[in-house]
Image (cartoon, rainbow, N blue to C red; front, side):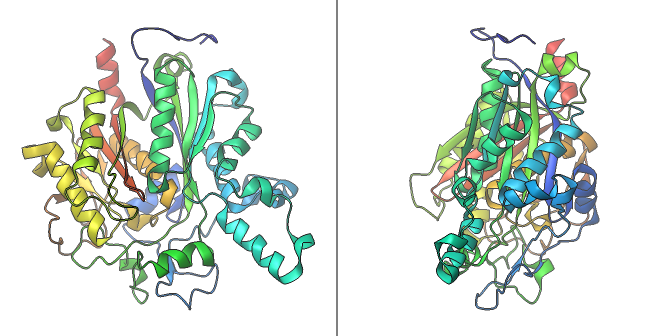
Length: 429
């Protein structure tokens, strides 16, 4: 497509997802990640990255098999902290999955949109330790460009040459969903023809981890880590922190069709609201979370009864899961009992700003394969958790339209609506 695209056109352009690049505790790359979810085993373990013994929580979902040498030469790997490595590597995985090379596109027409709650805070923490022990000359000067969240999108742009709209939002645990949604809107409006968009988080360090532990936000199931993350279950007692990243390739539909791209799904709706209530607790009535879902469905032009499946935020915290269930029921009404709901964080932990992008990838694969992943460790639904949560080994079902939710500190609520590409083709006919 030419540089001008359809800028100024009255009809919004259609946007499809053609590549996925997950880096998670359950697997790296689409095949390993999806195999991990089908395996039905949580990778949550006792933390080995640092000494967590002083904390009330001592388990996490660590990415054990990430090798920087698979993506960077030794010198470049040393220059990038883990946060930036994840962002760059996930982008490379997504582009490979899309069978797309950077030099195949007009770089000015490719956006880079990322999300991260904490950015390079863990690396900054490491450097502060060196400062206190050894003095300022021991500090890595790259910390200046590594600690801030914007390094995710800027390092990605430098590596790929993509010079279109670029940003990294830091909207807590909704960051990845917001990045995908913002990329969707840029392409829809004609401001870009394609985008790499997603979320990245590398928070497993004493300060980042310890603050959440002190706040009593995380689980205390230290002796039973595989069962610690248990969305919607009566015994849930806090989230399990995870690390990782996921980047998606989004393209304007005719751009993808012209190159014969394989399409996972079409992005058809997106919305963001704020509870305006509390920095850490969700609004008890779920009204603004419901508003985000309702607005996303309205933007998508679909009815509540069109939703086949919900990939829930499902953080495994006492307040979030019941409020989200309430909000889903408010939006879907009588249909709420017929739409399947999966909470997939037991497979990768709560990877904070990366979670929403990982869950968008799960939604794409659920559409592709007609399979709803299980909500692991759900034994007895808690009070207020009264929906059709997928349990056991997952469920084979027809999935055409998926609602994917993300909520974050500060009252942020974000929702995406994805649709099967066959439906998109029918809409063009």
